[in-house]
Length: 500
Image (cartoon, rainbow, N blue to C red; front, side, top):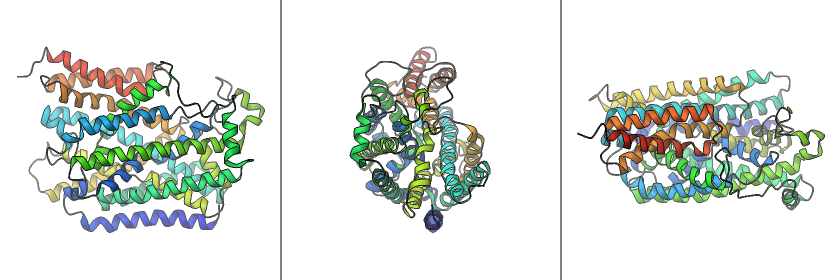
């Protein structure tokens, strides 16, 4: 990497910060701060959904999936479930969001069950989202550290990562504190163009450095011993992460939870004024998401052809238990493959563009969504009938506090070696099941009141903690299990605690 790359990277970070500050003049009410006065066009919301869904974790981890020994395209089975889940959300949930002037999706639970269910769901969201986005911040900091150590090889990597976490966290806080949700959406529109352009540029450069180019990489991936383009696995095995059944069914329920009951994404629908526009934004984003996941997996195959790890003697033992050789040999983890190529093998200028693209994906901040949830669902019940100016100021202070929390989470998780994509999705799946379940209860079980709903959620949370830490069940099944447990437990409890 050269000086021009640093100029591009830090120029982008400074630009994002200034853009957020520029939007501060529009943030006069909580309606402005949380839902952009409901005036954002559907296509911008669609781009924002894609940018949110395609975080740095996707940008870095998905190529690593195809690069790894025995890695292939079976991850796309999960994406097919994502598509199906979007259709269900458009038919089932989105019409409910526009029956009132909501600022958070959990206000629906308050109207249906009462304050306790709303507060429990909101608290689960706040906890899960802080952990998941702390992981995303950490992964982005690792990339920034790789850039810095390319210039200063003698620097201590640990301290560089710590400094990178703090720097990126501060930028994220400033941008969201001043700009509110509307600034987040419009920056994500720009981010989408930047990281898709960066990914395409990276793919072209990798292809040019492979014997036989793109076609040579494809032929290598087709070889029987590698089988990189294997797409379907119809095995019914709940311990396997990527199968047709876990992808279609588990992916559908995962999307119903993340895109249908998670404030982080639902808040974007609330920034438009009509349900048909929200549905159009959601469905069109699915087509873009499918295309980009295919592209990132192809980048993984290109990296496999570039590094050719199979030529090393250690490759025979890659991924074997107790062998000490990771499945992503010659790297310790799949998340390190793409950053290594970007920082070590990309030409000057393009390297900076791709790193800026990674930062673009990282700065899809959840701070505003967490603040909206905390203020509306956890603070207002105890401090009612205060002025909107007061709630706006509390929202901004919460944005600052939550940003600090995510920085701390990233610092605590620095020593983890597990795939960031796997960590983030498993954490989201663990919590989103009980939340989706209580939404389904509210929609289909009219006799269930607040106490049975709380029993259902509590039962589901306990079961999911047991499954997560004591069983080999793949995370792609978590939301299905968690939501069905909530639904059934609440239904059974309703016969004891009948609705008065």
